Amino acid sequence: MEQFVEFVTNHIILAGAFVALSTLLFIDLFGAKLKGYPAVGPSEATHLINREDAVILDIREGNEFLSGHIVNSIHIPLGNLQDRQGELEKFKNKPIIAVCRSGQRSGTACARLKKAGFENIYNLKGGIMAWQHASLPLDKS
Image (cartoon, rainbow, N blue to C red):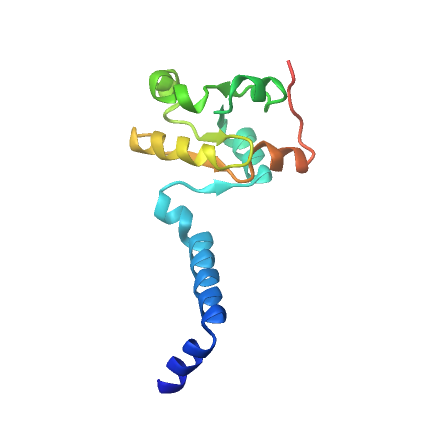
C-alpha cells in the first residue's frame, strides 16, 4: 500500500488522468442505465423506425430543422417541449427517438419525456451529424 501511495504522489498527473479516464469509461458503459433511456446509433434507429414504427422527435431550432431532417420527423424545439408535450401523448405506446445536431440536447429531451411518463424513449447517438455520416437520407422540404 505504501508503494501505491508513493507512486500516486510521485505521478500525480498520471494518477489524475487514470481516474478521469476510468470515470469516463464508466459513464460510457453504464450511463444509459443510469439515465433511464438508451442511446441508439443510426442503424439501430432505422431498425426501430422500420420494425417498430418509431417516431422521430427533432428538437432542433427551426433553421436547423429546415436545413435537413429525418423524413416524417416531428419538429418540437427543445425550448417548446414542455408546452407542446401533449402533441406526443398519442405516441406514448411507440418508441420515440429524440434527435438534435450532435446528441447532447436530445438527451435533455429524453430526460424530460422520461420524467413525464414516456417509457420507450431513445436518444440518437451523434444526432443528425451521425445520421448524415451514415449516408442516410434527409428531407430538406
